[in-house]
Image (tube, rainbow, N blue to C red; front, side, top):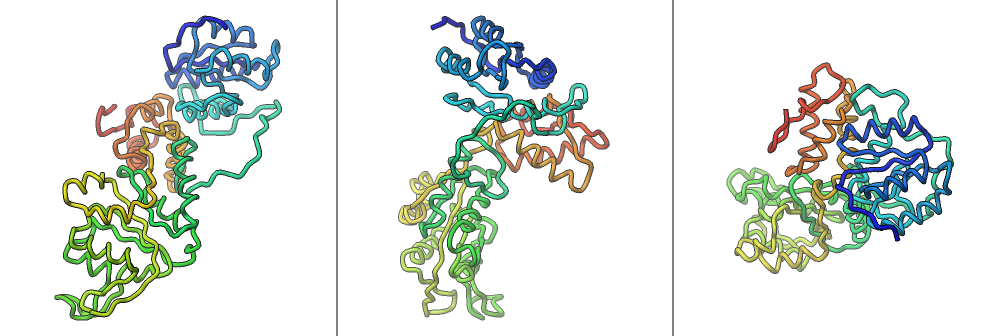
Length: 396
């Protein structure tokens, strides 16, 4: 085996006989703060690898001096820790798909456009090539949650879990930081279940005053309390046959937690002001950004209710754990903003700034930052670093 020196990270070797493609990729990746070394063939690429092992090797479908399949297998054997992608952004057989894939995929799509404004990342387009496309293995398509954008491994794994539990009647607890899209996951659980034709009722436990939460959840009769001028059906009963989504379940008061536990155990509820019990068929999906186990230890959340809710736990990954999805998410939000105004593009420096931030507010914060940048850019068609305003470590 060849002896090699470890690379410094964010380095990439681009191996392609297409000089124009090499130039476009070098320009795009350099603008995104990658160290790029270009090679016109396999032998030159191997020389680069022997000199310093990069983080990524981008390999074209055809090389003038070596057979690509055999070359890629040799490379994977010699440098198992290096990520190996083709010029369409697909991990070659046996190669890992690293955390930088989304950023590289964005650069590859950009390099496929015929026109490119100097210093800017042009509008995303598919990479154009006359060479034979890479054959993909057959198999069922991965489930996709409507409204959630990305191709990262953590996101795909989460969607797989949703698809597994959705057809069942199991109670689901969705955990995740603020802004990660927990309600979208709850909607998918309902949409992919056999209850999809029935109601999907939502109650945010943090948005309703404690004094009114019980009546909102269980319903009430006329005159049950001051202001109850007429009877009202609660959210649980309104979801009969369907799904009840309890957002921010950690904010539910202890007294109400006991009544919620009773409903989960027997499927019956009592409207406020009534003595008779009503039986309903409801699947409960709850969500929280809090650590409920810690809340249990603190005595602010019932252990028995926690066990009832956490039959199947789905964790929504924070954006910092799926950074490779940031370019795709940014393009998605810019496309949405472009429906009512001219579509904006991102400069390489702007995108690099997005990639480096930790996003404590997750996807919601990314959407707000992009909307703010579009406003700050005014008539300019390209978002630049001075338009990027971040909550911490602010730029510009």
